[in-house]
Length: 132
Image 1 (cartoon, rainbow, N blue to C red):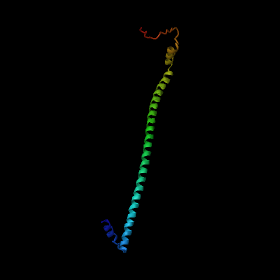
Image 2 (cartoon, rainbow, N blue to C red):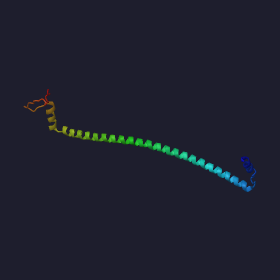
Image 3 (cartoon, helix red, strand yellow):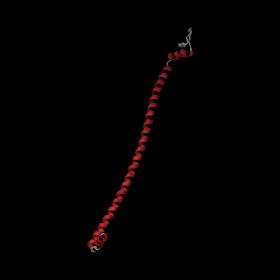
Image 4 (cartoon, rainbow, N blue to C red):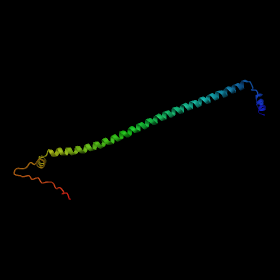
């Protein structure tokens, strides 16, 4: 039965005219255009994903650098605040060291200088006696 059907379809002949040739050429051209369109779309899709991937990687890298710089900035701000506090205490100390009374007080306290006729006694510091 299959042979009969294939024999029947082989008996059909194409019409050989200019219109049929034009239509076949038109269909072949449309098929080529469609395949070229698909190729172009695939190429642009690949290019698009390459560009998006590159930009995403660059963004992530810049984000990491920004976070690192932000942490460094915060650390430097903390160091600056500590330095400003130290500067204030040093400026206060300089002001006090310019005061003669303060210098005499430090000399009497730390170096045991005394006024004329004054006797300095040093007492041991209070220490807790160990309990046995």
